[in-house]
Image (cartoon, rainbow, N blue to C red; front, top):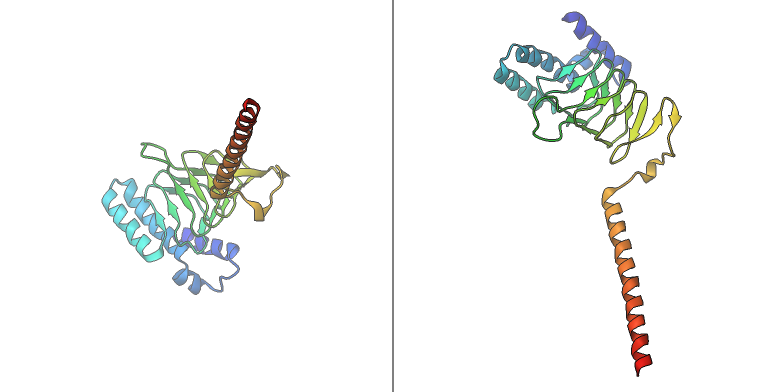
Length: 220
């Protein structure tokens, strides 16, 4: 147990240049507190003391702002940077050397039973605000961009950005061109499509009026 705790602290020093000393890390890093509380809650959960496990989980949520269901399975050297607003669902499985930033959701998409949360491979980075929802796998060594919404399988060694998430790099090869200042906005796209349809209807109406006006002049 103490060996794992030492490894957890070392992981923070490897991933966060702002970490200045072990005392600061142990007493001020909410991601570390949430992980340690989860280990206790998960141990209780596996022994089918479900209510007690949820009580521990909710107490941790209240103290850290991070909600990890006690049923979630988390690998080694897991680090939540800052952490506020992170949610990890019951059937989520997380590999080794995974890094999450604040506001990340690893959630489900409905009320179905069984496996309904994502499986995160090894050495995956999920950036701030990203939402990964559904029962699928995010492959090893993948990167999920800030505020991306991922709803389907992500192959290993991929980079995903946007809403909905799309792969822009795989195995080191860029797929298409990524312009960070031009990521898709679904609301703007909806208004744009509506305006285009209105313009087309207006054009057709003008053509129809012109045609009817021409017939009237000819009959006169």
